[in-house]
Length: 124
Image 1 (cartoon, rainbow, N blue to C red):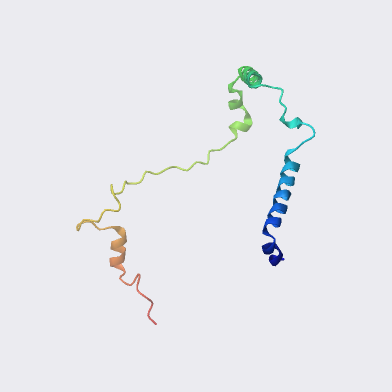
Image 2: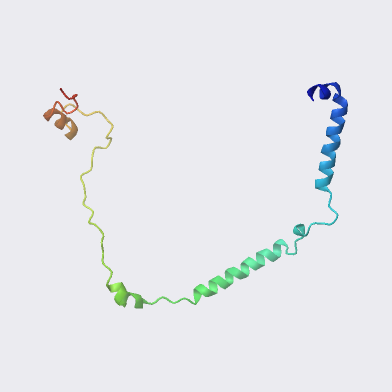
């Protein structure tokens, strides 16, 4: 097959171009215009429809009245508060990554001092 194509390069190229042209013509030619491309509403009509929807929504919101009757409802009064108290903690160093001064000891260094074998391998 490859020997045939290499011997008849021009004929193979012409056949390939005819196939591509036929495919292009088949995809692009239509006997009737597509109905999906036809639009009836212009940009002005769409904006006026959106404006009308906005006005209708605002009128619905204006009709809403808020009263405090839900605060006296037994279901609301039966609700319990499960929040936890936030305890204030002491503020740490301004820059926790700065090296420690010689007089300052941290809790991590003091615990390592108390137990020197904390990170030592186990003895067998």
